[in-house]
Structure formats: C-alpha cells, structure tokens
Amino acid sequence: MTMESGYRRRLVLGLAAALAAGGLTACGGDDADGGSDGKTKISVMGLPPTTQAANRAAFEERVREFEAANPDIDVEPVEYKWETTTFQAKLAGGTAETVFLVPFTEPGSLIERRQVADLSAEVGELPVVQKINPKILDFVRVDGKTYGIPIKSYTLGLIINRDAFVKAGLDPDRPPTTWDEVRTTAQRLKGHVDVPYAQLTTKNGGGWHLTAMTYSLGGTMQQEKDGKWVAAFNAAPATAALDLLKTMRWQDRTMGDKPLLSSEDATRDFAAGKIGMMINGSEVFNQYLTVYKADPSTFGIGALPQGGGNQTLMGGTVAMMNPKATAAQRRAGLKWIDFYYLRVLHDPAAAGTDAAGRKADNLPVGTPLVPMFDAATTAAVDAEVAKHANFPLAHAGPYIAGNGTLGFQVEPPVAAQEVYAALDPVVQAVLSRDDADIPDLLGKAEKTVAAALARAQ
Image (cartoon, rainbow, N blue to C red; front, top):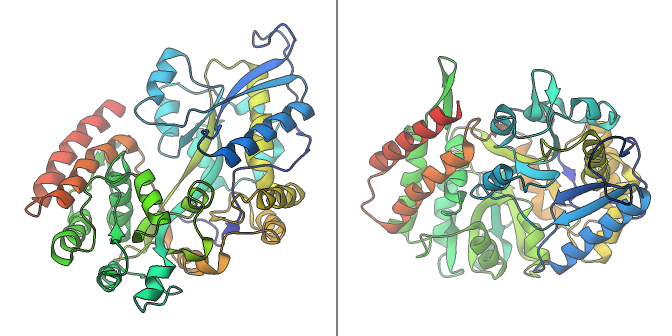
C-alpha cells in the first residue's frame, strides 16, 4: 500500500488544554448506560501506568478537561494496554472497555466475529472523519459500514545510537540504507557499544520485525489463493533475513548474547547506550525520553534498510468500541476519540496548544509519524507543532526522506498476531543455536500459521 508522501511531525497522544469538544451530542435517552446522575458513562483504554508519571498525569488532566466540556459524560480511564494473549478473554468475559485500542492487525477479525460495534450511524455525525486518508480508513470499513477510527499510523525504520556512530568514525546523519550496510556498520560498531545490532524475539516482536525484514527483501507473509489467505513466508526473502541474522550473531558476533529480547528490554538498553542499532518505529522516542530520561541528542532514525523490496512495514492503532455499547455511549465514545486523539491531528490551534503544554512538561513533541489527514490539514498542523518540537527533527531526516521513496506494506491481513507468535521461536532459535536449520524452522512455523489461518477464515 502506498500513501501520500510527507510526514506530519507530532505525537498522537495528548490534546489541547481547555478545548470544548464539538460535533456529536451525547445524551442518555432511553439507553441503559447512565448512572443515577443521568450521565452517559464510558470506560476508555489508554491510561499510562504509574511508571510513566508524566504521561499518566497528562492523560488524567485531559479526562478532566473533556468532562468539563461535556458535563453529561463520565469517563473512566483504564490502565489496561492491548495484549494479544489477554484481550480476547476481556471481550469474552464482557470486561472490555467502551473504547479500546487495537493494532491494525486486529480490526478484520474483530469485525468478522462481530466483536466490535458498528459505528456507521454515529460516524456520520462526525464530519472530520471524512477527511481521514481513505486508504487508512479502509482498515475499519466493511461492506460500507464503519467499525472504528484510525488514530495513528507508522512505519518501521532503523533506530541508531548517534554517539556510538561518532565513536566508531561513522556518520550518524547517514545510517545504513541496505542490509549489507547494516552488517558492515555493526562490525564497525564493535568495541564502541555492547550490542551493535539488536533484534526483538519475544512477545510477537520477533515475528513482527522478521516480517518487516521480509518485506524489505521483496517477500510477503501471506498471499491470496482461491479466495483464502495462505502462509507464504517459507521462501527466499524470509530465509535471507534469517541467514543475515545468523551470520551477524555467530560469525560477526555483533548481536550480543541475549536470544530473548522484548521491545521493553530493547528500549531500556538502547536508552542506556548499550545498543547501536535496532528496528523500531519513531515513537520509541517517547519512552526513550519520558521513561528512561535519555538524551535526545543521541537518538537518530533512518528508513528501514532494504534488500530489493523497496517496502517498509506500516502499522498503526485503531479505536474501536464494545459491541454492547449503547447509542449514547457510542456517541460519547466518538466525542472522546475526536477530543483526545483526532483533534490534535486536524485542528492547528489544538495542536499548537497541546504541543506547547507537552513541551513544558518535558513530554515528546514532534515525533514524525505517517499523516492521518489530507495534505493541507497536515501542513497547517505541522507548522504549529514545529514551533514547540523537542524531538530532534534533524536526526530523523533520513527516515522522513527514505520513507518518501518506499512503498508501505501493511501487516499480514489475517491472524497477524498468530503469525508473529509462530515466528518468535524461529528467530529465537537462529539466535540461540549456530546450527539452526532455517528451512526446517520456517516450514514448521508455516504449518502452525496454516492452522491459525484456517481457523480465522
């Protein structure tokens, strides 16, 4: 999938202070969703954990602002963050939030299983939705009906430790653009950083990043055959990606000695200066700054390195609603989605106020992401955010420029998290055993995925 070029510079999280939410009107009516005070009550996913004190305080303040502007709505923020292993249990148990957030991998299966609310009627009352890039909005539309609101989209790139690059005599403004260059750069980083190149391997991260590498090498994870999606990763591109990791791990010794590495582990170690390069999205900067208090000047990002595919993985986040939500709750939920997530993407005044407030609180401002709205809307918002950006924008030049020339390939269309989970052990095995049989590992994983795809279709 390709998208309009250019990247808006902003952080999705946050909203302008003291903005009244407009558009939808939430009222209790005859719906059994209110309390004795007559308010429409909704629960919303997204409250940051106590370990992220600044982000948590900012979220709670936004809730207070929203309730002040909408006195007929009562918002209950919930700390739960989407996890593939627990979310289905929440849905089945009836404990899912009114408004919950899922990655781009999930809407298709949730819609097919009728586990999310149809928002078509209420979305018609929120005109700004019509300005969202239709290629992104298509992720949540089936048969002309709308089941969610995309709130963020991103692409993966190559995060680099600029200090380590300088120490190794490398130019941090010219990160590797091919996988061959990644390998030689990692060799030059040896002795200047603990782990020259790190690869995620757990919590579906191994499969996720292997998928991105496969795309960049000209491959795919699934293909359509006779009206069904089938596994297609047991082929040359994924094999080449794993061969590269195997060579870097066992021959070059540039990947450290930890075969089990989560996204949290990698971000922590990168912030501590222990990792030279890793795949990730630009938003990893948010934790880098707010959780680990790391120095922004050492953070750099380039486009995803390529090996003939000229593609990078595009993902994102969608806000969806509990299928049990009443009409009043759906209206209230959409007001919250616009107030908290969308307004800073389409309203320049809101974006500027939010950016100024976040910068004052030392929260990330200006992180480059894929634009959600049309070019004119994005440009107006970017101009306001740029006045307050604390993200080192000059260090993202290769990422922004590189992605302007790459195609965007979406995550596997069916059972993506199951695909990633099946591939985690493959990446782990390659980094754990120097005699790992890559074709055999991929063949076994493909059988596992084939069963998951059969269940999902």
